[in-house]
Amino acid sequence: MVEAVINTKNIELQAVKAIDCPCEESKLKGELSENVSGYIQYGDSFTAISGLLSTFGDVSTDRIQTIIDGMFNVTLSERTICSMIEKCALKVKPVVQKIRELLIGSKVVNFDETGVRVEVSTQWVHNSSNEKYTYLTVNKKSQVGIADNGVINNFTGTAVHDCWGSYWRFENISHAVCCANLLRELIAASENNPSHIWAKRLSNLLLTMKSAKEKAIEQNQISLKDSHISSLEREYDEIMDYANIECPQHDNTEPIKRGKRKKGKERSLIERLIKLKESVCLFIHNFAVPFDNNQAERDVRNVKTKSKVSGCFRSIKGAQTYLTITSYLSTARKQGIDVFEALTSAFNGKAEIVLG
Image (cartoon, rainbow, N blue to C red; front, side, top):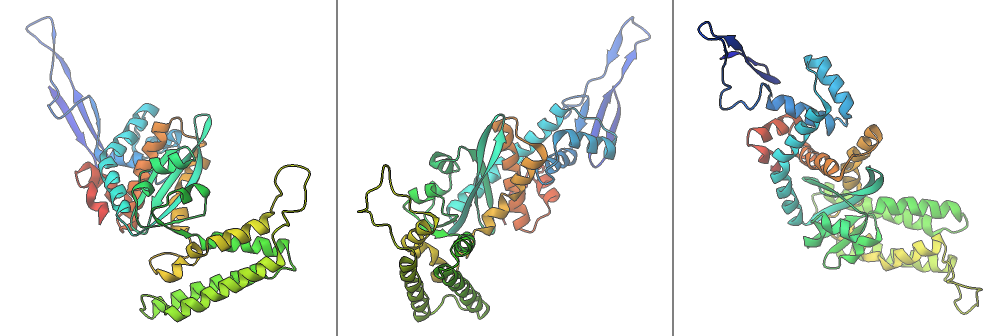
């Protein structure tokens, strides 16, 4: 027989009492009800708390044990906590796949990557996101890893990224370069070569472009005038012409002992800026394209914090479990939904609440 059912907001316990039969020399046991799979049941809210602590809170498993014990006077094994986190991931996984499809259909998506330790090797978390959705996966840092994320290789819009070489291999999309990264490179070039003024001039021009776009948006304009864009781009060309004078190409006819002649960082930056002018200036042509890639960088920040707290993931599966829940919760926050409400809703069959 069932002796007691204890319900709290976070825990549900089922106890079965064995009794002696006065008529026979045996004991009778009551049966658990059909909806109870074991003697101890942890409710959905309790399971969600464990998932939130691990992902949104970036708390290590042993500390989750300590927190749960202190808050609820319940001692959980590490395996139980891991099972709870996996259960959270399974509940949100179908919606996370829908998030991926929504990003594929978006006009602009930000891409970034960051390294994490998985077992004894370094793997890379690949992020695809925008102001509405986040989708994170783990794989090798390569074109294969980017493609395995499943967004950019099925995408036809504009990809915003930090100019990493592998992104340029996807040719059927528009590319926008993170100008915030370029500004840092230009500042370094100016400091390393104080007599060269081209880098400072280009920094000022990029900031002028940014201000012009922001002012136009404040005035409810949907684009800059063609004449304004042409003027800004002419100045861009003039600055790069001057850069070629201040830091010219090497004379390739001069013999060297062996190998290829090194260009140097400044010269490499100049050639990249000339080659990628269209991608650098795209944000003033299309107001949907941001000046920087800060969105993607913010969306992988939690992963970096988790790595610092926990040190490493024990398996690829564990890393992806964490990233699946993080993708879901990050999307929930972008939609203005409380993360605890979002995760408990997933257990109630309402995970799509985060899709907006």
